[in-house]
Amino acid sequence: MKKLLWLLAIPMLAASCVPSTPEARIQRNPAAFAALSRPQQDLVRQGQISRGMPREAVQLAWGDPSRSFQGSRNGKNTERWDYAGSRPVYVNSFYGGYGYGFSPYGPYRSQAYYGFGPEVAYVPYRIASVWFIENRVDSWERAR
Image 1: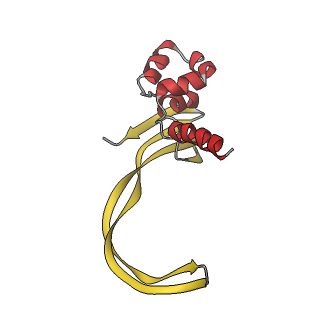
Image 2 (image 1 turned 90 degrees about the horizontal axis):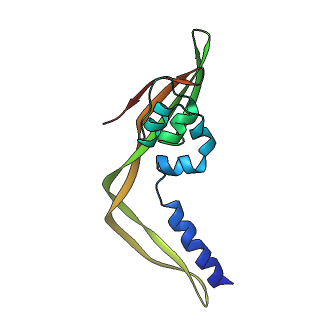
């Protein structure tokens, strides 16, 4: 039974690491893609968006947003979708303390350990935003 679980876990892990592309999102939602005009379909296939596109087209082209914000402007409903990425930041840090463990005779406290070591932290940043008015793209920006 444990071998079966491992055999199922490996493909699931591999599938979760595959980046989502416009083509994969189109295959998952063909009805939304078919509802778009021909020029919008061409843009979505290229992973691009344009003014006037519906939210579904942006979702097909760029994927799900990291965050969304709702608001109002001039009496119209607005929404902003933000897309985030992350950058690695390398730092040297101090670590130390006492180690604890277990032996056949019970818990024990080992020697103290101290040192300096490199660490990697990932800092999020905004890579793109899309502004919608009444569920249509009004404007967008993307980092280069």
